[in-house]
Image 1: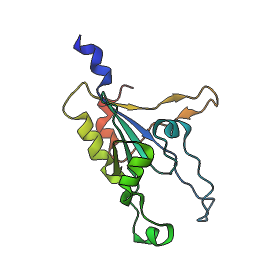
Image 2 (image 1 turned 90 degrees about the horizontal axis):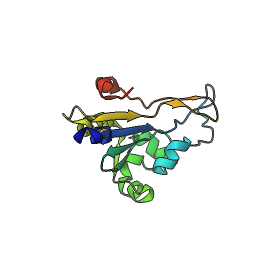
Image 3 (image 1 turned 90 degrees about the vertical axis):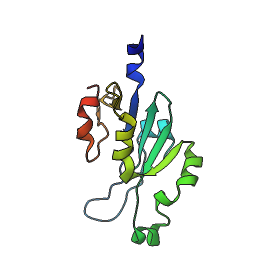
Image 4 (image 1 turned 30 degrees about the vertical axis):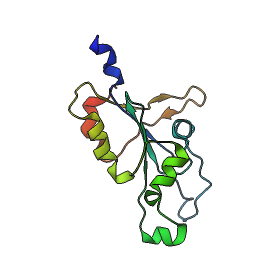
Length: 147
């Protein structure tokens, strides 16, 4: 039955942890990646998204694109290190974060059965709710989300 495979069409989208600053300063506390994101992709850097395409299982990470000022003080912007990051994390693709909306749209395509799967629910250990991944424009796929 073809309907048995409908749940496996589409893409899983996860949002990694965000780097924060302390109060009104530019001091960045030590960053710790979201546990589920580290488990799924092995990524330790902040401000990264990841997708798993269904049914292929291909993993893609999306890294920030920083400007020259960042590079002067912090080194190469992650979007310039795609080959290194792809090898380090064993993913099929590393793309700049600004390409995420188009990538999601291409993964969902015209197939009405393709779904955008987001992590959502209560953590039974902490009692906290997992916040689903979000980006500007994700609402255009609201009808493709199972919840």
